[in-house]
Amino acid sequence: MASKTIKLRARAKGDKVTVKCLIKHPMETGLRKDKKTGKKIPAHFIQEVVATHNGNNVLTADWGPAISKNPYLSFVFTGGKPGDKVAISWVDNTGDKDSAEVAIK
Amino acid sequence: MQRRTFLKGSLAGTAVAVAVGAGLLTPRAVLAAWPKAAFEAKKVDDVLAKLYGAADNTPSDKITIKAPDIAENGAVVPVSVKAGLDGVESIAILAVKNANPLTSNFSLGAAALPDVSTRIKMGKTSDVVAVVKAGGKVYTARKNVKVTIGGCGG
Picture 1 (cartoon, chains in turn yellow, green):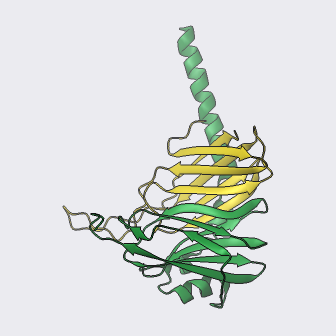
Picture 2 (cartoon, each protein chain N blue to C red):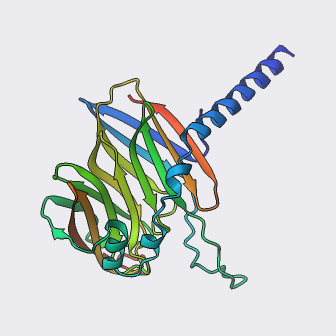
Picture 3 (cartoon, rainbow over the protein chains, first blue to last red):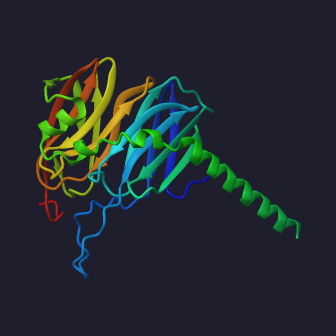
């Protein structure tokens, strides 16, 4: 289940669960120029990240190109307990996607 | 030989699991709703109008933005937004002087608390605006972040 692009941690404290995730992605804005050729580097960024807890949607993030390279995302939700599954998936503007799932600690 | 078969078997298993996971989790239906117009808007008011239908908003002191006063590197500015409001539906983070101010918009599910963190890019020194939609109303908070170009901390 290991994902190549997503590092995901979920930790419960009481009934609050903090989810932290790092995604490996270039997040090109489409405005930068290649120094050698002078051509613009095409935009390549994550548009949507969806987080679920035991299959229920917790958070949907719409991202623009102004999110930093290798994006970091963290959020908190209630009602989770250790052992529950938290999953993250992303889709970028070229249609690439990836997902990861982790058990809450 | 046995070890090889075993490896093959487990690899195939993982591939299937990944495929199933991706299929189940693909947010394609929602992707159609990616607010392109809002992300391409060039002014804060336009972004609000595109996202919420109107540019009306109320400044609120119940929203806390955690961001550095001085960001040495505009490409990576950590921003956290917390809201002490009830019934928060979404949180958007805007960098006012970026060419396209909207950086991200988080739609919160029923269980999610209004507390999100991420890292944004900022072209130059400007306000970071957190826009929180709660109970059908739009609230905002601002925080100025200085961006030191050159990244030498000067």
